Image (cartoon, rainbow, N blue to C red; front, side, top):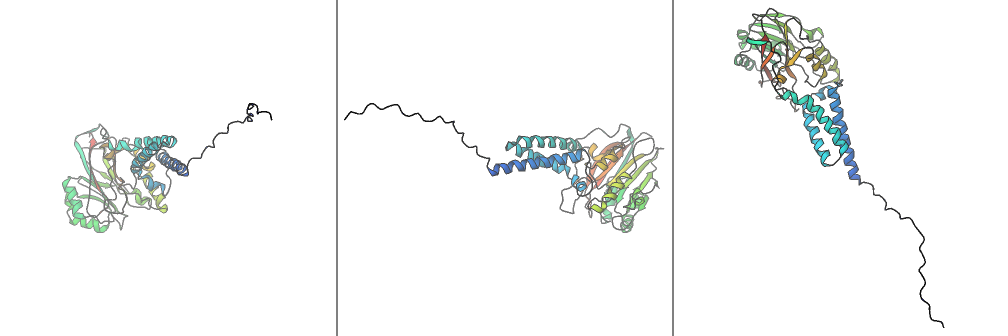
Amino acid sequence: MNPPGPPGPPESAPNRMPVPAPTSAPPPRRRWVTVLCALAAAGFLAFAALRVFGLERGFPLVPLLAYTPYVLPAALVALIGTAVLRRRLSSAALLLAVAVLAAVVVPRALPSASAAEGGSAGTGLRLLTLNTHFGHASPDAVVDLVREYDVQVLSLQEVTPELAADLSAAGLDDLLPYAVDHSAPAAAGGSVHAVHPLTDLGDPGRDLGSLAMPRAGVDVPGHSSGIEVTSVHPMSPRRPSSMAAWRDAHRALPEAGGDGPVTVLAGDFNATLDHAELRAVLATGYADAASVTGDGLTGTWPVDGPPLPRVAIDHVLVDTRAGIEDFTAVDVRGTAHRALFVEISLPGA
């Protein structure tokens, strides 16, 4: 038997291409996080576009826009969350939404120059406005405010005949002897009271078959051009059926500017500065007193009412030919609205 020879070379294995390891799909939990971040970003960006371009139409978009100041911090929280989760596309969209919302909200909290430089010493007008909430505001509290702030013009909304009589009994007529009284049951009435003689100039609200918005000429000594004050109260946009009346009331308000009387709009607008209809009124030549003094984010409703975040729906809009010297919001017993006191410096006589 022959001895075994040396082992031969091993048989070469067939050439094979390396097979890459299968790529694993992202875990379902991560996919859901990405989707949720994208939905949040899209929602806040859509809201910002709605606000900036004035696209709100009908119910519920109009009432929803009133809460824009609360949407801004919520969008900021969402931005921080997406940044921590490293969702770059969603973070970029949220950054844009935050920047847009901040640009329209933050300036209201920053004091600015007076609405005009035409106001002069000795020509101030002290005005107070209040929605009396179906006439339930305390008459004594209202009269006490008139006395405390030395009010010269008082603009009231939701004035019932019973409240008008109670205000007289509480001494309002002694302080403000002139009145344009358009009181009516429930929320339909309104009135303007003054220390100076008044002229009834009509009622754009009743002309529309809606809530009263009496318009009064105020005979301020030394001002031949005169002052006009409207007690503003559009219908609340809380249901689809009231949207047309809400819109038409804003469009019926007198425009500012020109060479005529200095105009003041004071009352419950049922709108904030985030509503295109109110911004259109401002664009005719008004300044919002609260925004001028840096109090534009001061909520005025509800003080003691529905469990909702407080929003600024009560305003004093002043013709930009006049100036804004002071703004104060005051709680009043019996009403869910805050009273607004504004001191206006009138242009020179």
